[in-house]
Amino acid sequence: MCYNLKMKTLDSIKQRVDLAVSQLHFANQPESLYSPIEYILSLGGKRIRPVLSLIVCDLYSDDIEPVINPALGIEVFHNFTLLHDDLMDAADKRRNKPTVHKVWNANTAILSGDAMLIVAYQLISKTPNEHLKEVLSLFTTTALEICGGQQYDMLFENRLDVTEDEYLEMIRLKTAVLLACSLKTGAIVGGASDKDASLLYDFGINLGLAFQLQDDLLDVYGDPEIFGKNVGGDILCNKKTYLLINALKNANTAQRERLVDWVNKEHFSPEEKIAYFTKMYLELGIKELAENKIKYYYAEAVKCLSQLSVCPSQTQLLKTVCEDLMNRDF
Image (cartoon, rainbow, N blue to C red; front, side, top):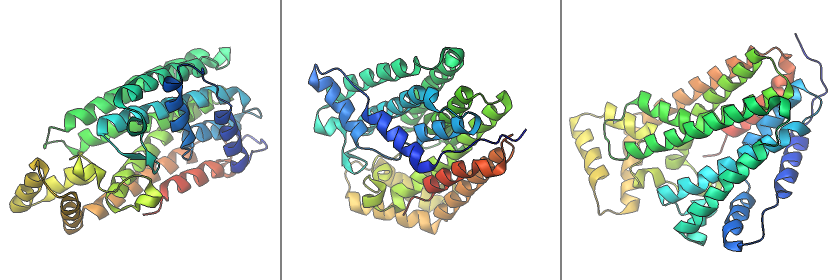
C-alpha cells in the first residue's frame, strides 16, 4: 500500500520541535536543580531524535501533535544521558560549551540528571492512551539497554582485548537503540504497520552504528569548532573506540607494544599522545577501515527504507535528515 499524504517540510518540523522544547517548564525551586536542565537543553544540537519521531509520524498520519510529548521525552532523556556521560568521561565541553559538571559540580550534575530522567518519563506518559503501553515498553527497554551500553563502555576501559564485535554491540546499546526508539515511536503513534515499525527500528540501528563510528573518526580528525568537543578526547582517555581496537588488532608486534605503552602511560604530553595515535591510525589504514564500515551500515540503513510500504518519494525527508547527520564536517 502506498500512502498519499501531504508531507510537512523539514523546516516546519524543526520549528515545531524547537517550539516544544522552548515551552518545557520546570519548577522554579530549588534553582540549582533545574538551572542545569535548562542549560543543557539550551545548548541546542540538531534535535535529531524528536525530529525523526515527527517525520515518521507524518509518514502515516496527517496529525503529528500526538507524538510531540513522547518525542520530547526522548530528547530530554537523551540530554540526561549526555549529562551523566560527560561526568563519567570528565569531559570539559559539550556542543562547544562547558559541560554541566564544569559550570556547577559533579553532585549537581548527578541530581539534575536524575530529575531529567523523571521528566522524560512524565512526558512519555502523555502519549495517547491507545499507544501508551507500547511506547512506554519500548522506551523503558531502550533506557535499560543504554545503561547496559554505558556499563560495557566503562568495563572496556581496563581491557586491551576488546573485540570489534563487542565494541559494535556496545555502541548499538549506547547510541543506536535511542535513534531506533525515536523512529519506532513515531511509527507507532502515527499508526504504521508492525512491519514498517520494525523496518524503521532497524533503520535506526544501522544509522546509529554508522553515526557512532563517524563520531570515533571525528574525535581524531574533526574540527573542534565544528565538532563541538575537544579533538583527541577519546585518545587521552584510552577509550576503546573502533579505531584503537583495530589498531591493536592490525599492528605488528613492535607497533602493538608501542601502542600499549602509550595506553599505559600515566604521565605524558596530551599533544604528543594525540599526534602519535593519529599517525599510527593513518599508517595502519584504520581511518579508511572505519570509513568503509560507516558506508556499510549507512547502506544497510537505506535498504530498510526501501522496504517500507510508503511511496519512495515520501521517504526523501528521512534520507535528507540522515545525509545531513552523516555529513558532519571534518
